[in-house]
Length: 393
Ligand code: GCO
Ligand code: MN
Ligand code: MN
Image (tube, rainbow, N blue to C red; front, side, top):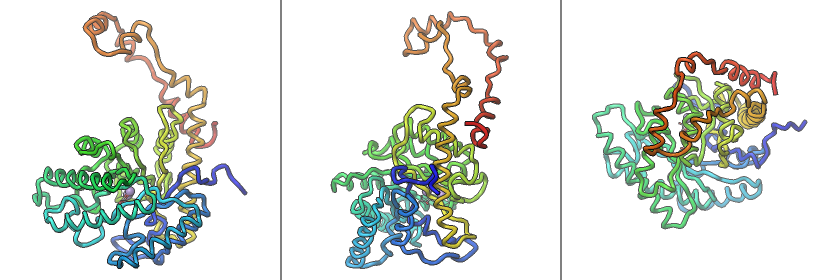
């Protein structure tokens, strides 16, 4: 039976080939699922109502493939995309799997490793452009350290900056319509990864030569690993006009990078995130792909993988519905109504001037009364919980 929460193409849901193709390998155990066929993954995702798939270079073209082999694989993949109407909105490079990257890719002390990383990325950017991607993600999983004396972290940042400036230049030279999105993670697989949070990335971007074509790709799990509020991180990126992409998943605090089904943990945080992305609280809506960078539990076979994929998309739509209900609730609106004071409104509206500073000094404010005043947030939060639990709205 059709449900209003069934995914549709226009919802812009995407998955990585590496997510629904995840084989359930972990540091302690071997894969539990067979080697995936990218064509099969694309067809199943299309049937489920997804908009597209994203990929690393190596997810599609095995490393070491000849040029002829590469062209054949890409041609066949494009045919499957055409047959299913699926898009490739985002592409990226695997700069973490090869043993040569054990001490970083763009930040390695060895110029041969840095050159190898650039060669691989140039080829992967060509692949992304050929598949029609508009966003190119950089996740520097190996760009970090354990023996921290191995390099001056400032040198690492300088090398990263140089590589991104170089690659932006390449994209512009080629006339590709690609924008870059930087993805932060605090640790794993390295003890410490450089630029560990989205906030760090946002500042780093301001130091790049082509900063206008570089934004961020925040991931739920990664900011939660750092103990931070993901909605706050996304809000800062949106306010800066830098939310180019988003990696949706779920994560328990204090764990390894779990990449769980979206909304499977911290449903309140997930609701607040969807509320922001959908703009139900005002302040603009995120219009890019809703990408799930997550994978099924290791306990699952292929049927479980498709339950996982459906679950990510359904939960997003259910939360969008809840967010609309919450923000339209008259009691919520009353609690959140903007507060006014006719004496202060004109003074706090414009910028600084001597007159305004002088006038501000003269306003009498009863701070003790303000301190005694209750703000109604217990009620507000309970309303949020009741919307979430389905007894209201
Ligand atoms: C992780 C990362 C990766 C990247 C992906 C794209 O979970 O460790 O998020 O999944 O997003 O490799 O570069
Ligand atoms: Mn992750
Ligand atoms: Mn990610």
